[in-house]
Image 1 (spheres, one colour):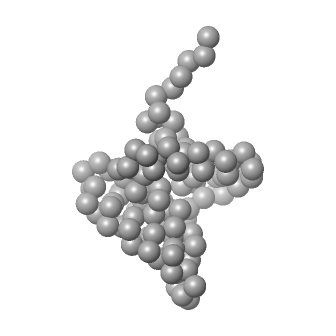
Image 2 (cartoon, one colour; image 1 turned 90 degrees about the horizontal axis):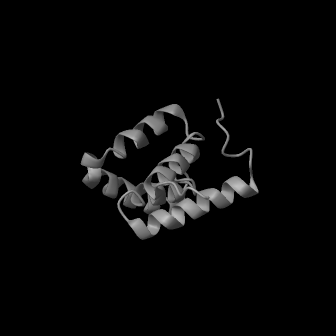
Length: 103
């Protein structure tokens, strides 16, 4: 018999796994934004990160902003949440050591 875990719990586990690669200060900011009551700030930050990721050819901005913006936006968009979860699983399967904590 296979026990299926709650998709929300699985999403939380996968996001925490992905965030282990972030520097401490950025990780704390993302944790602050992920609080449910901060939805407007989270949506604004996610759009700014996505736009920054798309403008990664500029000196200060980088491609790292795009997946981070998608992870934040996935907190509020269920369809996007499933896609982000699949992407994190694919990365974990393809590069097993990459999602290991860097500390």
